Image (cartoon, rainbow, N blue to C red):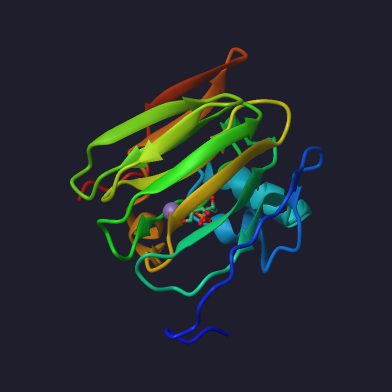
Length: 196
Ligand code: F6R
Ligand code: MN
């Protein structure tokens, strides 16, 4: 679509809340339960849910720019609310293929956690509430988790050359999970985590 000599024109776009949509997105990604195989700790409940329905867990609207250093990809992520057993709906999560690239998120609506982890297994979880920004430094894998009862809406911006490594998280998962216990979101060790 773009060549490296392409000169991008400045552009603007509007975000509509509700329902959580951006003008003229170049990409609309929809991820359902079936794309989360092995990620929810209660595999039995996951399989039972999937047999009934391949539920929509989250969506991403993106504005595409050339995937070259210096440009920034941006968009809107929408994590729907719900649970697999007592574990909240969440994104797959990933490292960036260019590991040293960071990402900026800004929460517009909802309540959640940004779960983060380094290749060495250090972890961090930042709570997401409306009008709170979170900065994910380079090297930190990230997963958004919706612990509320409305859609979690976030803007994101990241280097266009970052790329996505999903395989590492698919294999080892995240060290921590967020589950509902007695009506509260609690962070627990993930029994499925494989230490690096
Ligand atoms: C891009 C980024 C977000 C996520 C989105 C969906 O680098 O972090 O746009 O892509 O939140 O999550 P994943 O990509 O993990 O399915
Ligand atoms: Mn990312």
